[in-house]
Length: 520
Image: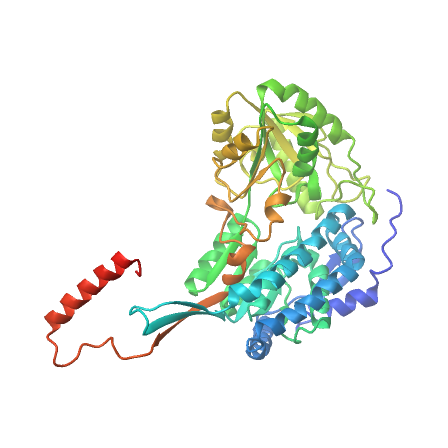
């Protein structure tokens, strides 16, 4: 492995400044390493339950003032933040690469999510959060206001695969709605979200409003959930169940984006040039560590052999490596432990009868957590790679004969996060996509078209989650609806001198007239 030159921005002074905002009263630290080399970058403080309670108390104090700012004033902060994220893009990319080991191309793609989310809500938030007037029970003299109030302090548990995008993008609508935020990033990838908080404060976000706590999930999660007014979590289905259960016991809401075993269907009339290129990103983008990436590909019999040959050839041309430049297509897995998990899935599949089309090997010559882009055939549901989420650069190819068969195979899973359909007849491809049990479906694309459409909610169905991010729903979930009923004249009470039977008659008659006139 050739010597790796770390970016000049990633200095000990800079990293120590970032982690200094993490409360850790006992002095316990986590050795946050550069994934490419395994070298320690910085000692990350680990937060105790009392540290977390203190972070929530500080956030709650700051939120009392922030919630009284007008929406327009709060949005002024995010206009400045948008510009700062673009200005410091290179530094953000450097941090993401150092902590996650992803290829620079993918690290850059990740940074774009934050300004895209910010830009969408800069345009939309004032209208969504504005009080809405509705008719009251009695026309003219009564009405009701739907007022959106912030929930308080939002707890966000962000994953390691997109630490900046999830750690910051999920906080943006929460803050715009008038809440404070306490985020727990993964220990392995705390640097980029910490830098995001620093940029937000440079843009004018009140200090203390956005807190960062760190630690292992079982140590930090319970206290975070118990102190939050709402929880946003992205991660595994098993952990999501634990978080959802605890949130339910506390009678607070939770939005959970969980695992997936995402299918791709290639119809007979698909453009194979486009499809093969899309398949490369679907299977191997971010080294397969994308919640919405593709692990199962179903290709029609008539084009299977050609697709397989072209996909194999394209996969073998991918540049895999550790570099802080845009050369490699694919980078490292997040850790040696995760690499071992991916390797175990491949080994299990081969032991049970699957075959390797290409790849299938670890690459210690490139770094401690590298695994080759791998295509398998003959994968069945009895194999780990056939029914559980591998979350690595491994994809299985399957033949199908009819569209009904392909749809049945795509739906034969407990998950339902994302799906991809490729075909020349757009209307037909859309019709196929709408039959797939998935919260997101992309036609002639893998995932970006759906996920980057920030005006449309994005979430999972079945065991892939509850709730959604993006769109109006992604902002309103961080609010409580306050119903303010307004009565201009006292007409709701029955006069003392009127028999109640007469009141009943008038009420029934009034409702019938209003229905006839279309008033109610």
